[in-house]
Structure formats: C-alpha cells, structure tokens
Length: 123
Image (cartoon, rainbow, N blue to C red; front, side, top):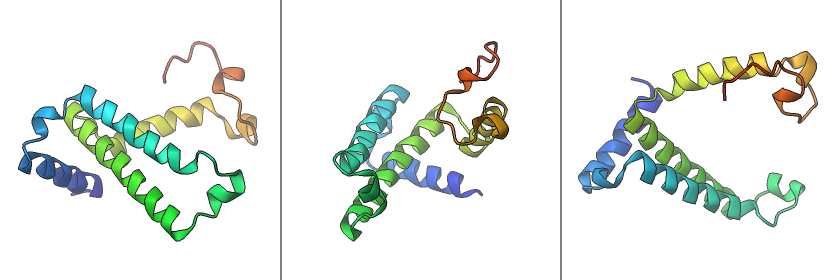
C-alpha cells in the first residue's frame, strides 16, 4: 500500500468516525481546500523573499501544519473523485516536461504559451 493510499484511508476513517463524510462533497472539499491555502498564504503575506526562507521555529511549525491541512483536503478530494494522486502527478509532470523544454524554459518565468504550440490544450 502506498503512502498516499494509507493517508487517504486514514483521512477517510477520520471523517467517517465523526459522521463528516456526508459533508465532504467535491464542492465542499474544494472550498475547504481554498480556505486552508488562504491560511498558508497568510503566514507568508508580509514576509520579504529572504524572510520566507528563514522562518522561525514557530512559523515553520505553523507552515507545516497548514501544508498538512492542504494535503488532507487534497487526499479527501482525490478519494471522492477517484483520482490516483501519484499517477495524476506523473501524467502532469510529463505534460509539463513537453510544455517547458529545459532548453527554452531555463531561467524563465514565462508561461508555456510564450514558446509552445498553441494547439496544446492540456492544463
């Protein structure tokens, strides 16, 4: 069993034990995910670039917990939609490798449409 599957099973059991599964629709999970991402954003909002790399132990712990909350909601959403996260990541990385050839994208923050064929319609 993969780590993702083990964590997904644990998150599902947690929700079921509290009778929360009925609230965990894809819509609601996506909205909750947005809220958790906002909490993560809040931790970095007024930091400089340098400060964002030099978190205090308390800031680091808070960031780790918010990242965990984001991942838990992603696990629940993927579970509800039947998405295999590792497989989806592998597929998306292959798409990104094609969209962002290293020789063209190296050192650039431009979107792939700046140098890729316009008929690429993946997301």
